[in-house]
Picture 1 (cartoon, helix red, strand yellow):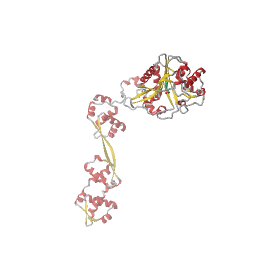
Picture 2 (cartoon, protein in one colour):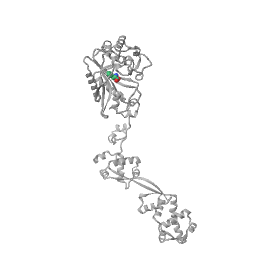
Picture 3 (tube, protein in one colour):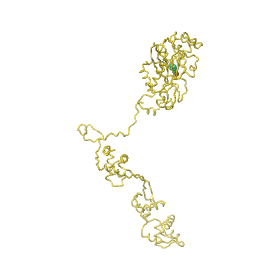
Picture 4 (cartoon, helix red, strand yellow):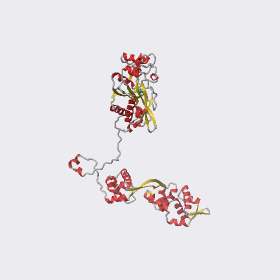
Length: 509
Ligand SMILES: N[C@@H](Cc1ccccc1)C(=O)O
């Protein structure tokens, strides 16, 4: 970054700190700046941090020790260390036996022992024939203090001393004193020593203008024209900002809207049907025999109230009965059993949206293109893969020349618009022939997953509804598409209020 730009982007606080560094005598600590600039320590530290990241200052971190005297050391600073007190005693009294020292000294027993130990260590005295005598070293020491004693006195005088400020000699003395119990209080402290870098010096040489910043623009400033002279701080685009969670559409709802949009754009009309459906529309008119496994209680939710749902026109019901029993006029043999209208009346929660297509075909004449999105229900145990309630998008295309190939083309177009690669495999449904299953490709897992069924409605479905053109039909699951889109492995995520996750999803995918 060039110097001009750095200067331009300096904050008021950064400038103040730089100026302080120019003015103060090194070594400079953050506390020195706090004092000279009357700034808050937090502001100083944060300014130092950004100045350091811009390469204008270097901050030297070190650990120092603060030494303070104890009660005992203050006493010794006046009277002398125990060994000095005994040295003086010996110089007055001449050589003494240990027991005599114990008696004559004003120290207590332990202090006497300590004193004799240190007399030996410092070579101020020696033991000869059971008596303690001053050495020539000791004689010299009577005239001058040792560096440990000097340090002790300085401590008593100043109250506290930084280890780093001591001369080498006194540093050694500190080590010696610190070996002894109860003479020193030592506290470790972290130190910051701040230096201007060459870059920092260059900037100061250019001269820094410190202008107070206007924080608020008042009505008065505007009226008087003072605003022209005010100095405003630039926007800090890196400043912390509050995280806000705007309301947004649920991701499942979003993909539903996307699917709706695709079909509308492909020229389909949207239809709806009831969620509580008769078995008739859900199964019978789709040529699903009444003993079909899917109709069992363990697969389908039967509704207690209302237990029965109104059937359509008698003639349609009658035609459906005939198709089931012997194929009616379709040329098929039917399922060859006695069809029961009571079973057809039962209320169910629809197990697919194909019943919406069947109803639509009764009401509308081809050519037509219809789609329907809605909830369907199956008695599934809840797992990461399955829910008893999910969404399908259903559709039909009915016209004179509609073929199975057209159906595949429509499905391919739909999935391509959603951004997926699709393939088809043969399948079976009681109500379609030919039938297919659509699979889409998962690049991350390098696998294909099944997403829905499709096929050409059979004559056994179309005849009772009096539809004379071919009808291409499809019914596709939506939750799995959503899971792939969102990269989630557990379908339950779509139905839990996991706010953390929902909030983390971008508003626009
Ligand atoms: N109803 C089938 C899908 C389907 C719809 C239309 C035709 C063929 C199959 C299902 O729920 O899986």
